[in-house]
Length: 111
Image (cartoon, rainbow, N blue to C red; front, side, top):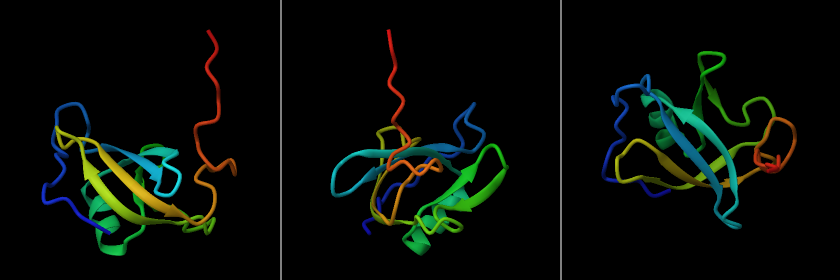
């Protein structure tokens, strides 16, 4: 896993200490999911090499795949230009979505 020399900015106004985390399959380039990270989940991801997020609904940390087994091994993490969004390239061990779908993005938008 490669790391950025920069650190995320978790203190931007209106973000409640969270940054969006876009998770992409390293092999296919497909977007798997969007989640949120706080400083603790970001640090745990760097330390463990697997994705950790902050659940806004449950107000707690969660290790992706801890109960399902569908973990995500981090290949690389890249911050955007404002350091308030992180792109995480992963090797997924199963579906990313809690519905069992490979990606969380499967609902087409109709005009």
